[in-house]
Length: 420
Image (tube, rainbow, N blue to C red; front, side):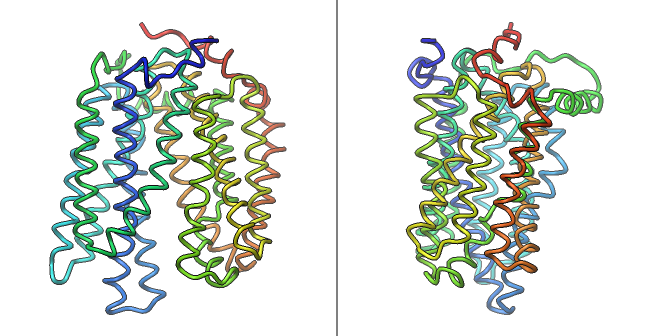
């Protein structure tokens, strides 16, 4: 019990360095993301309509998602074959190059949208290899007994990045777009230094074999392990149906009538709620009935979405979004912990890659689903539809995946073989 509640940042400096590197990368990525949207929209509006300019902003996500979709399974196999720390270092250096390239493009009198999209696509390749290597490196740096607490701290760091990154990107973009990109490049460089300082053996126990066979083996493991598949698929469909991020500008302008400043407040509310919950989980991680609490969190996520959809008061909308973010943090924590605990170390990269593919698809397709639903049901109806769908998922997944419903973190970890 003492090991389970031990502070990993104090006893395991290599894990603390990884957490620092991932936090800096998160801030850099979100700073750059906000700046990209602002710059592309500003350039496009000089020659195109609002609708087409908005379409081009949406294309940024697609341009980054396509190479990530193409490479992520290969990236998972790579994380199970080669030194994970070195993979992260290479990815960070590539991200430094991308941010510096965007800064250079921004100094031009007439920045090229084609060049910006090309760099964004290259950045998507870096993200594809970063996700499985980063997620599978953490369990190598701490004993498996305190892995839930370590993941709690990692979740907290990501939530803090989600609060700080967009704010920093917005402020710096208003001052200077090249300055914002340069700041992102500097943060990535600092992340590279932190990860370079990680010591110890960070190369997995590679089993050998052909790449395609190993990739298929990872997919087969996810499909056959009902805890892993249940957790990943629940998150996929919950975000696909219940996500309201893409609808926040509509609610800010046409439902709540609070303008751009109010939109910024709405955008930050889920991260604030998620950050507070992540802080709680980092000090008091869930141990017993983790799968049950993940299902409860998805149901709460759905209820909060419905409350937000029906609210006509800013304060109630903020509270609903904060609760939504806190529920999502619980779901993310349990999913990540269960996957890392029950997955053998030589297979973590491939399993994490499949999980990353599901999550990325849910985010991109979720925005598409929200847009289509809003087209036919209106923004309020679309949000209600998503909330009801998330609640329904809780009952279905609880029935279809009893192994997930009955999963416990403190007993699940004893089923995972120790790293030699």
